[in-house]
Image (cartoon, rainbow, N blue to C red):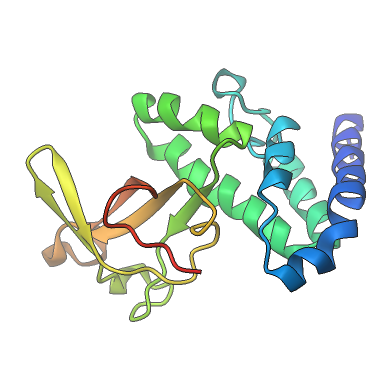
Length: 193
């Protein structure tokens, strides 16, 4: 392990011991999502682990990222899962496949912890099988209208944005599924528990 990674691991280990471990049972019993904790993780650069500094990210490696998730999971697996879903699924899809305008709009909020991201694939009828997606997206002028339901979406009830999968061309099978960046405060979106 490099000295840099050792320093990162030590930082996150100390953070988890001080900021997470003392509250695990309290959060669990109250069914409380510690939003304030994620603001602190963002301030330390752990919500933008993989992203370039130009977007506010820490520009660390996937090895560093895995070590960070592992250290948090050692203390609380649910916090580690929310961190991983935010970094890998929601934010990384916007960074990797979004336009430059989308990156500039969303990445600074995501890496700072101001916003949390979700990734919405799973459906009751399709599970995690993208090919079975039933949610649809139909173009309406310059916009898209999405209709459907998603299940078990990590960070959806506490996040501000999701990358959501929807069928745009049923005749193309699983190749007719597109990803949409959806701000979760849009009218018509209902987020459950």
